[in-house]
Image (tube, rainbow over the protein chains, first blue to last red):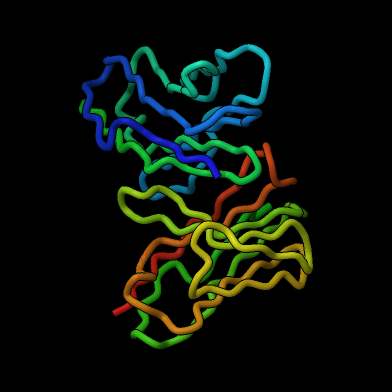
Length: 110
Length: 113
């Protein structure tokens, strides 16, 4: 199974700042890539996914992610965060089994 | 639709006790799975099922049993609880395994003393 690395354990931002969360996986081949988000007190839910095609994918709430095959990376971005983006974010990679990264806690200060 | 439901939400066990965490889904999904979430380790797959009557081990199966007698239900059994099993447990379902979105339940927070 894949090993998934998320580079930041905890990110603290002010509102309107830009956000980028790194995600790398361990080896190539055909993979499906996901970002999930867990808002405080809520279920994990899908933020966006990449299966094939355009490597820049857009998700809910203004998030986007870029798949760079040569770097085995799938980084998440948002140009301007809001207080409501405070959550834990998980990158996940699916080749034959779904593997999650350790998660990044994002705290947005008003 | 209720989606994926889990009971109980919280549980405290003593070492050596056994219990079953319940998971049910009403979306007619074939694929169901159990994860545990520990600080700094993300979600790790315990067991999964690709359909009724079929289960398989994930990354961390030791100390846990599962069965899948119906499409809807996928209970997780702790055979003899240990402090190392203190964690948050999530059940998930999806229409198929590889490549499809997982729908998660609200989680069960388990403490083993």
